[in-house]
Image (cartoon, rainbow over all chains, first blue to last red; front, side):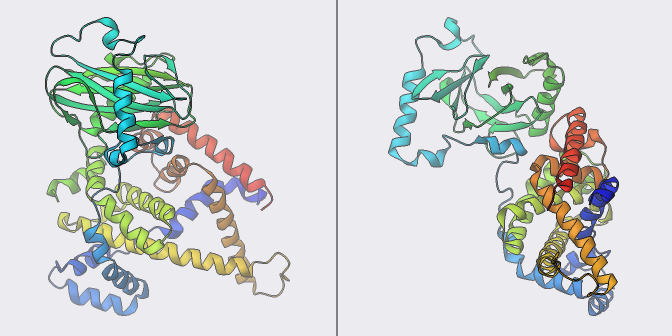
Length: 267
Length: 180
């Protein structure tokens, strides 16, 4: 094995190509399956199938799985990179089916807002027309509001709330030093979620923290028009690239007209 | 499906890749799960299929209306190969007994066993890496993407992509040096 380490990269490429590659007739096979054959294509393809066992097997397997293909949801879950294993959706609608969970949530809302040591807006009134993110945490039987720079432990549950004096759209993402970005709100779809005006409105999705890096951030993007997922991720990446230590500068997001709020979480 | 989507995919626009993913990834995962049975392997296979299609195979599709059907055929073909490869490796695992007399089998079979043993060992070592690292290596060594493109595809900076690939190769070497 050691003598072949010099060829590691070639070995990797060979491993990947062993299962990859298609048939030049994959497009024709696809049309054959869906009945959209081009003129003259059918006879040529059927001639090929007589001599190609793999393509015959592909055709048979495709027919067997046709119902699976047609019935599948558009996306099995919100698309997230590896960091997703570190964040578990919590307080989403299905979890509130039990009375106990619902009671806990109500208790959280009552206990946290307004908490004695962390008043909403730090004692300032929320300006008219503004949006504001609030992050609540539950750990070791204690509930509290998360302020920028708070140190949180593994296992802490995060709940997300907002206040807004007008309707709009919001997206909340979680990012870490390694550049991984997970979208918390909304759970599905490709653009930000509609938000109706209100005070300390609970959002349906939160997270539970598992072991993480030193600096992590909750980034909220509020706007009058919906923001696309890729726009938001690019903005967060720009902030990550321009960061100084653990500080993210909302101005680096480069999204005119979008209110960007960052809550830094230290681990 | 949007007729312009194929053109945008051919220029490797991330927004177009995201759009395709939103429309078809669930179906790819569903078929892989049905054919491979192991949900974790099926989802990883689906990710590989999607990456290979987005960065390579998309250029082979001529007709925009055939895009979804092409991806469906590609998914089935890849899952069939994976299934057969796993079955073959299981058989070879039984045959490739270190105690077996090497002069017994024909030379070509010994070489074939040796090659498959190497690839199996490499696959085992790859399995120890994170999902993120495996995808980065595939984008680099199979799809020949730049670090910047890898960073964009996986959602981090090109600098991090470079460090991740470097660390992952070092981890693979260390794993291959271990006794199996």
